[in-house]
Length: 73
Image (cartoon, rainbow, N blue to C red; front, side, top):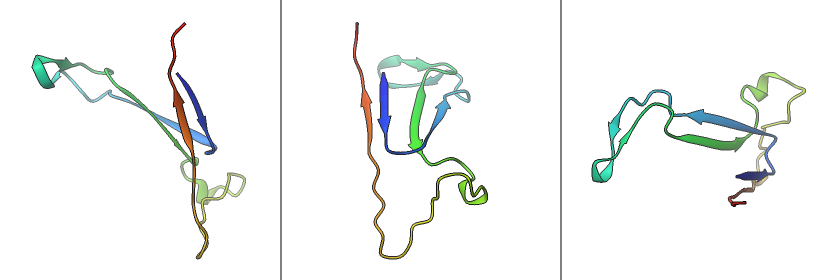
């Protein structure tokens, strides 16, 4: 997987809390059976002036683009 984004950072979440919950058709999902990549600004950005700004001024529009590219070799 390749990730392209206009955002300066990516948060990665893993499914650490799951412990065998049941899904459809008898499937079960153990710990760490899922992962999420969330493109965004850096956490705590407002408190670090050297991080990219997260302030959205009145009348301004916020846009971002993230592309998740999947392939096989």
